[in-house]
Amino acid sequence: MSSLADLKELILRESVQFGEFTLASGQTSRIYIDIRKSSLHSEGAYLIGQCFWERIQSLCPEAKGVGGLTLGADPLVSATAISAHLDGKRFASIIVRKEAKAHGTQRQIEAPGFINPPDQVVAVDDVVTSGGSTLQAIRALREAGFQVKYALAVVDRNAGAKELLADHHVELHSLFSLDDLCK
Image (cartoon, rainbow, N blue to C red; front, top):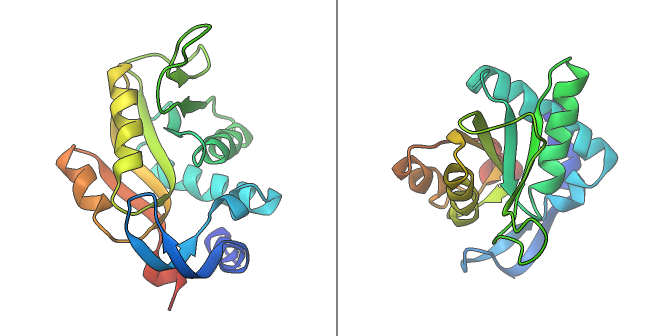
């Protein structure tokens, strides 16, 4: 079975819930997908990292790292960087805070020293609906001087994120759509 098929099975088992939910976008849904239940699972982290790394190699082989908004993207960026390392590549995990720290270095972006603007990075997110959180991370990465042309999500709810990001010259790709998971 492929990594993608294994990941789908894990997400269906661990991350999909039914009920009445309000999403981060403010929209309501009868289906909630909590990817953290899968991305914090050892098998899920491994599979997401492998799938993201494979996708990045085909979409943006010049990328030097992945970055996303804390907290949902934190396990995704680490898993992807570990997959790159296992493939013999030096690749950065970048954590984007919602706002700069008020103490210490006062940084909004945390990254290893070997990655520097204007390096190309890929934005990542667990689940995208309207795309607002992903765009927030992209803006912070760009303000720090990184180039961002692509974004990856584990799940796209097909509710406007692709169009919003395209308006900002970012191409969104996902491992799954909501329809893929809820057929």
